[in-house]
Every structure is written in structure tokens, then in C-alpha cells.
Length: 550
Image 1 (tube, one colour):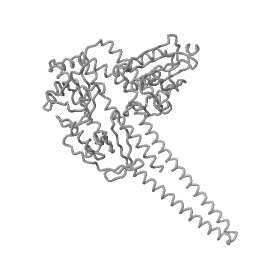
Image 2 (cartoon, rainbow, N blue to C red):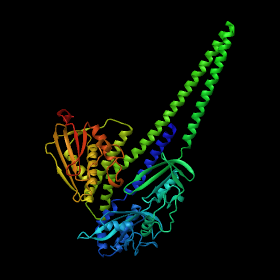
Image 3 (cartoon, rainbow, N blue to C red):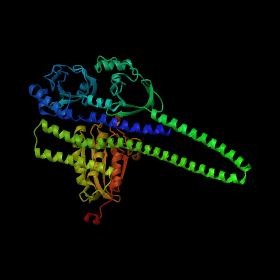
Image 4 (cartoon, rainbow, N blue to C red):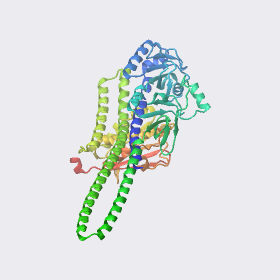
């Protein structure tokens, strides 16, 4: 049981790394279609302008970004401009109105869909957004196609068994080529009809895969029983499956059992020998008693050596368990890096795309990019502090200024969610002793959570207030979203726990923020609002006059 637990801990660490890599690929270009939909050239072409200039522009951008294709469709679904316009398998003139991502974009949502291309025959992940005219009505749809070939190739080189299945149980990606486009469970007639209507897997029979799920995180696949761990992949109802062999754990268990049996047999033999020698010693003369005592001393020395060897074996086993725990911690650290660097990287990508699509003041762009780079450098410096903790430089932090910078960082999120942000900042607030970057990190995480929680509201509203009181200097972030539900703050601070719908988010923001607030000697509380939504309050000790002089 001990060895099986050790193998399961190692498998959980590997699964966490695979989960992070898939989520990073899904979110890598998530903001690109939104930015392209605002471009003047795309809008002009969608409204009937010349397509030649846009074709060449989309081609150059697709080559630089490493995308399979970028293409613009009219409201009927016909492609009018594309980055692959000069190739034999060009999308020009093809109609993709039957695709779910096109229909979702026209309906006002960002469309996302994985399918085999009807034109190229190659699989890909499609993201689409509507292009809106001056009156706010759709005049077209801009879409991109992303290939997961490199990700799948890295799975094969790892030598491990991994597969990604969609909400219908169809295998989309796999380390074994024969597993792709097979189903984990039989499809219903409704599921098959929906897949056929969307032409999601043309030419594929979607046969069942040779596997059988078991109990206690185990499954039989290709005739072998192995460990079976799963992880959810947001924003879809996809599931990542990881299979690991436990043969080594079983072998070590049998070896340990054999050693225990041998030790018990040896102890029994020694006991019988000792008994025979005691009987013989009682009948022997006094001269033989001295010789028996010497032999007893030799046996005692042999037992001491055996005990020392057993202690060394136990120590080696404990060291192997510690290595397994560090591997699991490495998986959580990789997820934390993905979560914390995702927002500044997405903001930097939006600025760069906007600069490429429309000329702007290069000085302002340099200042914005520089600020984001400084923030990313600060986050990586915190990760270095996690590995080799050195003394961290502290300073007096103005909470009002930090909140304004955090609000500027989440401005794209506010715009995408069409949310209103109201700031009520106390003018004579005073200072807080700590790290400004880490405090801004707490504010950014709480603001992003508030935006995500209220995005389904008809009029999303985020209210921020600062003040000073008996619990020190504080700030509150209030939203009108779905609230905390039945969850407590202690539960939400656990890593990978989240209240977001459809598996959105990794559940790391509050866990990281709680640690930062605790490091600064502060407190964080949360409650549901009577009118709907949630309130998060963070309080820090006020900086004394002596601290200000430092």
C-alpha cells in the first residue's frame, strides 16, 4: 500500500504538468480574435471593401504567430479573406456556417471548437469572434485555426500514455496514434447526429477504444491494468487521462514481503538453535559454558548488524517518498507559474497585436510593455525566492496608487466583460509596509475574480473602496456576481478550488493571495452580499512613523 501511494503521488505530479501544458495552448491566442475584430482593415473588408490587402496582411501575421490560418467570413459563413489565399487548400469561397464556432460568434459569444478541417483534412482548434458594424450588429466573423501537432508530438516522445477526450468522450489528442478519434464510451444517436451535422470528424468511424475503467483510480487499457488519473480542462468539458504502470510498486511490495518472510524464518531457526544450545549447555561441563557464552556474543553482534541494515533500508525508502512529494510540488509550482504569468503575457500580446494592426505612439507602447516586463520579472523573482529564500526588500506602499495600477492591468478584462469599475479611494489613507508588487498581485487576482463572477450579470459592476479603521488600513472589492455560494473562504483558499462555472479557472488566485496577505501580517475575509455578489476585504497593519523613516 505504501509503494502504491508513492507511485500515485508521482503520477499526480506528471498529470498536473500535462494539464498545465494543454491549458496554456488553449489560452495562448484566446484574445487574438477579439483584437482582430476591432481592426479597421478587418471591419472595412467585412463591410464590402477590397480583400487583397487584408489577405496579405493576414498571411504575414499568421506566419509570425505560428497559426495554421486566420480567415474572415461574412454573416452567411462564406470565407471572403484568408491567410492561406495563395495555397491549393485555401479557405476562400468555402462556407463554414455549419460550424458551431461560427454560430456561437454570431450569437455574441466567443466561439471555440475542435474539429478536423473539411478543406485541409487536418485537425485543429478554432477560435472565433463577431466583427461588429457601427450600429453594433455583426457584419462578419473573424476566426483562427491552431494546430496541436507539436503538443501531441511531445507526448509521444515522453514515452508515457496520455489522451485528451472531449465532452462526448471522443479522443482528440493522444500519445498513441491508434487512440485518436476513438470513443471512451458508446455514443448516443443524438451525439452522433450532432457530430455529423457539425462535420466535426469527417471520415472517422469513432469506434470504441480498447479500455475499461476500474475502481480506486485504476483502468485496463490495451490489456494491462494501470493507474488511471484524470483532470478537467477548462473552458470546455474536456478531460485529460493519464495512465501509469504500477509494476515497480507491485514488485517492491513482493520483495518486501519476501524479506519479511525470510526474516521470520531466520528468527524461528535462530530460536530453535538457541533452545537446543541452552539444553546442551545445561548438561555440559563448566568448561563448555564459557565457549557457549562466546558464541552468544557473536550472534548478538550479527543481529546488531542486521538491525543497522534494516534501518538503512528504511531511511532509503523515506528518501524516495520525499522525492515523490517534491515532484508533486513541482507540478503545483508549474500550475502557479501558468496562472500568475498568464495575465501580463495576455496584456502584452494585446498591446503588440494592437500596435501591429494600427500605428500608435511608440513611446507609450514602450512604457506599457516595460511595465508589464517589470511585473513578470517581479513574479519570477518571487519564484526564485521560493527556491532560495533571501531577504526581501520592503518599502512603504500606497494602497490607492497600487489599486489604480491593478485596475489599469485588468482594463482589457473589464472591457471584454463590459463591466463598470467604481473607485472610492480614501485621500488620507497612510502607508503599508511591504512589497508593492505582491500587494498589487493580490489586488489583480481579486479584481479578476470579481470580473469573472459578475460577467453573467446584465450590468456587471465592480466597486473598490479604501479606508482606515480598527483593523488597520484596508480595501474592499465588491461585485454583483453569483457570490460565494455555500463555500467558505478557507475552502476557496485551497489550491485548485474554484466557484467558476464550467471548470473555468485553475483555483490558484485566492490560494496565492492568501499567502501574500499572511506574509504581510494582514487578514483577508469574504462574505456574500444581501443584494447578490460577494465582498472581499483585505486589511494590513498601518505603517508607524518609525517604519516610514526606514
